[in-house]
Image (cartoon, rainbow over all chains, first blue to last red):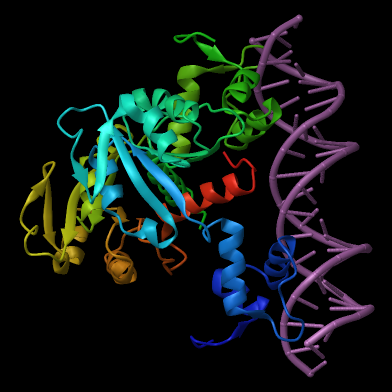
Length: 188
Length: 188
DNA sequence: TCGTGTGAAGTGATTCACAGCG
DNA sequence: CGCTGTGAATCACTTCACACGA
């Protein structure tokens, strides 16, 4: 299974990711017929299709609400832009950071959130404010017309149905690990 | 459903978390019979049982490998200790941070990882090194006898079966969101 | 021949519905 | 009565196995 090959079969992908070959074929076939019988999947085609499916073939404009420790760490993380996520603005309520730039990303007063999100056509928001402020931040993003939110605050947000939501709770991740260790079951 | 109440029923929990009442009962009954017919679940009992199930009734000793932006942000996050996760040591290869303390947590040379993990009986590890170094860091943790790893590096680690693994890939979270927005399906 | 895509069969999870207890 | 715990029924997902195309 050397690098640089032109095609890959469902069973090779299955071995690589720990699924079954039938599972790989079913999942891919669900999104369209881009396998080649007798050949497998052409790698360049497959990558392009997966990027299309995930939506990472387009550019997404993103904002960060909250530039505390976590927010700043994420702004400095270079991995987002590689997948087409462009962070164009950040917000905070602390006057000491408002007006500054972090990694070239301007930090605005959270009071201007609605205006700037609309002006810059920002589509996705990441919330890294304290738990107590997270719902309010989410409401402001939704009111400004955002279509999806990644929430890093350790609290469950309630959002209208039409807004996408992914939650990342770091304490929960550790709890999952403690659970899987304490009960010796694998989650992977 | 006011705060301070003594008991809670499966249907109340179901409404709160978006499950069905039967689901809540099946899941809880799986771990033991601590519901009271006609009454519901006593809140203090339920909390104690869940903490026992998750393993958060004990103290876990944790280490952080990598104190770049992400590692430092996580070390400064106060939420871990509340759930019984005590970060007792951090490691890096950069001489400029070795010997310093972050939030009272000493940063050691990664070469000392094995010795210190064994000395301090560290149980869980969090990896925030660059993707290229993550597998090596994981191998060192495993060799030192760690029982579980939270991996923040954007790479799939291969570990022996007996070591617990939870992965948090921030780019993947954004991709999930982009997918759920692009396809208008909710994941929650 | 090799390997996809897909109905059919099998397996696991969710929901229903109710006996039994406080 | 109210509500749990749990078999039975239902539903969804996974695996099997094979027709067909390259």
